[in-house]
Amino acid sequence: MEVHVTVNGVKRSADVEPRTLLVHFIRDTLGLTGTNVGCDTSSCGACTLHVDGESVKSCTMLAVQADGAEITTIEGLGSDGEFHPMQSAFMECHGLQCGYCTPGMVMAATSLVAENPDLDEQGVREGLEGNLCRCTGYHNIVKAVLSVGGAS
Image (cartoon, rainbow, N blue to C red; front, top):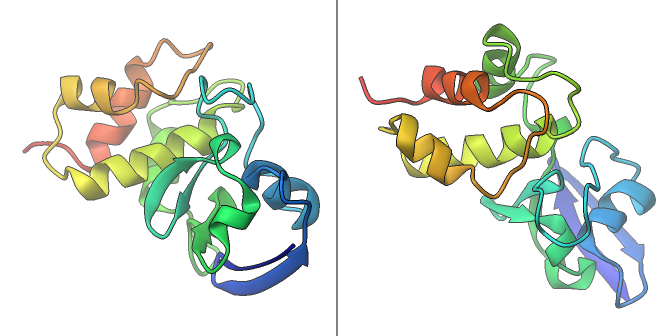
């Protein structure tokens, strides 16, 4: 089947098997490897990206389901060679260690802040509970998210 999507502002199309997961389409077909495969069971969130502005675990969606969609991956989050504020916050607040979960965590966090600009610590922890990090203990991740969009 042919899939037509706009990824990071660029129209793309490709023939895919109907059973191809969106994460594999993004990584293997389009060559955007910032989106990681962590579990293929939707448990970890490493594959999180935005589909039509919504945070989606791309291992739970078929590429053909995204036909016609606007997709943003971690590679397209910043603009004009600059990091997105959430990416900068993760660096400044030391919200990453090995970095494997970071793309999915950043994508989920940007969506969370956009939907809930007045988050508190508990709201961030609950909002990111579908994204696992095995390195940081979450304290600095929460701090990073709150520095971008927290209750004042």
